[in-house]
Length: 333
Image 1 (tube, helix red, strand yellow):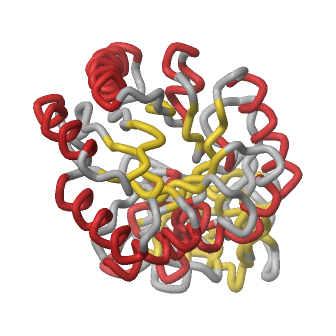
Image 2 (cartoon, helix red, strand yellow):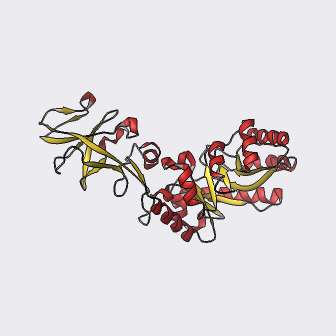
Image 3 (cartoon, helix red, strand yellow):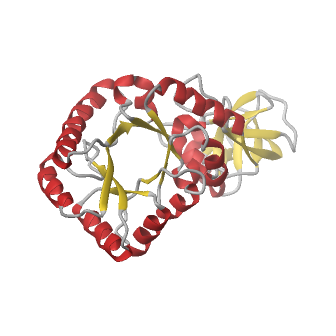
């Protein structure tokens, strides 16, 4: 069962509004708000956030019902999507000349200007223009009056000050070149949750906060999503016997095993066999994961069939070196 704590969401958002000061809060609600449900999350965040960021034009159309300023982070060159974006007055990412020309062509057919933020590749090597591309970009933008550049942004690949500083320096040079070239002040943003918490020097005009809104990144935040399941069986397994497919776990001593009605079909990855779940207030190690069942060692706690098990939520962050909290929030339900 999934429970969403909207009070925690609001408090988390208000926390970021406070620390950001004069910088705008861009609430990242892409991919169904990290598995929290885009529609309701957007509804609750609309009075607090200054901007929304989403992953697709479809999501932008949903978010635009609650807020005018919606940025589509994933670029698109599909005419039908661009036209829909124009009609919804949302902001498209322009990360290359391919998307730039595609957006302009669709804008000409629609006979309307398109709002755009220019993406700079400052080191992640994923999306964006490089510094060497900017003279050509500036010259091209001058010839495309239907492209209304409103912002310029990038994305940190690291979470430490050294890596962020080197990217910030490169990005700011690119942003300055672009602003001077088109003679326009642009909204500048590069900080994600971790950078926004790390230092105010990264916050610039706006910070894109995703994970922090959902309760992770600082002890001052509260997890918004709780996913629970139920114990469907309790087994006493003897020393030397195995638990799970392929002898996933071999008992070094007699143990009590709780069988829980969730598994990788529900987003609880098989690699979480080194994680913990909470049963009756105690943290119990996961020893095996099947498609629709999890087995946990409950030798140190009294457990009965029907007892509730917390898989993720307050005090239970079951991510490990192979599965990160982002994946759990997006997939676990």
